[in-house]
Length: 447
Image 1 (cartoon, rainbow, N blue to C red):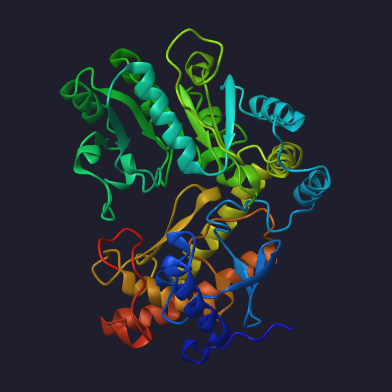
Image 2: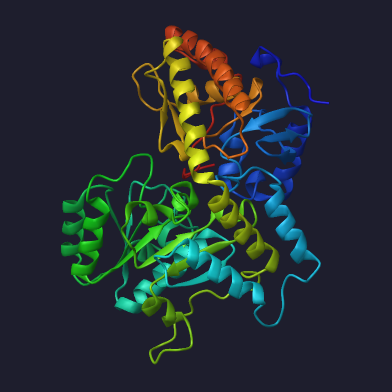
């Protein structure tokens, strides 16, 4: 049975999760297989280790049930163990998952994807987003003969590979010579991007960015980037790992009507199963194939990239989105949640400090201090209160499995958290409410 979440954070303890986290740190560097899932991202001794999940709820090994947001780092948009996805996967498991030649499922999955994302002409599947974005960069360099990559500085993550990680505070192990080949441009500023392209004339292979983030693209911005890329002879790459499906079934490119040369999809594509995709113009994509006369590009070649069950999951996800109007539901749920959180924060006098941002289907929250500056200490306080109330929310990114009762319960817990937040603001010191070290940013130079 579920244990009751206590009213006071100080009484809320996770002894089994704490012990499991210690075991993880002994065996797994960082205690998790994704840095964003590390226990340093949660209040001290309050990082639940998950037993299982169903729909929008997860259970930790201490017996607590949570309403979960940002499920699977935004990948589980239909909810855990979604029946249509699970059934599609089960059908393939009894038929074998990986063969010495392509499976017919690869044909079906490619046809389904290109029907869903009609702005692309070819697609190749992989297992994670980094492989897809790095393949796009390599392809752009091969097609243009240029060395430099221009990435959007306002978007937090593109790849685990050197061309990106070398630009972050966690650049250890990346040669300076590699990092120097990556330059940055600001989102929404066409003039600054053109200045960059002019400064590195005929050196920049591609512009890579998330087409949208926590704010909508300025009018004409994406079309302007398309024109700049064409005029300067570089490849335009949209990283649609997050915007894919959450903005529309065809991604942000389908919503805003601007067609990139290449685009990458993942996360929601598999509803938690490992599948990503590189898609784009045939002329470019075929350079990684066999039906051209130029130099070959080692585009993507993965042993597990076309596992039948993951491709079946992707097809089921696409069918579910289209037939059930999932994107519209995500937006409706997000709008209800955002309105509730903003009202709760305002009613407790912290409306300028607990701030909800982003598209309704991809909400995040900011925790600001007395001077309205981002604060890891206040984030810690806020997360502790959410956890104690049964809400696991590193973000407020919704899944379609949430119900109105889940949203209402979340808003109630947020109101309770905001009441404590107000006390800390009045004291001009959140330390008494932290019960340990503050949460830490993922990208930092020292552990």
